[in-house]
Length: 172
Image (cartoon, rainbow, N blue to C red; front, side, top):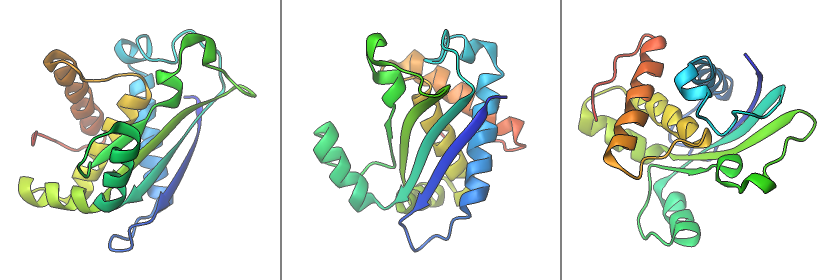
């Protein structure tokens, strides 16, 4: 697997996060996706030469994702996850590899929204969090879900990634 540099920051004091553990989970999810030809060959990384992939994960609350949503997406609601897929969303002539490293962007997750969703689904909040991290990574790799079939594709791969970690996820 390609080397990863995943920076994790937690601004949400009500849920203590082990940033090293989250970094490892994100790295494992990315490895699963990149070792799956259906994904790696169709990802935004295909055709680029690199030795390292980097991205950031920020944990916050719904107040912050609401502000970000309004400012950057013109959407007036708190999101559970916002992904800035810098590499995937850049025009081809603006994508670059610096020192053999590709920076994919940033995943922002509102932990209070994850807790709320986990309660509604009656699943552990850690499971919902892993599902959302896997969702953010799919976006960073260039997979979106503007159509129902795209959504089904993304969710199918998220479930497969979690299954590779021994987690069964059936709460969509």
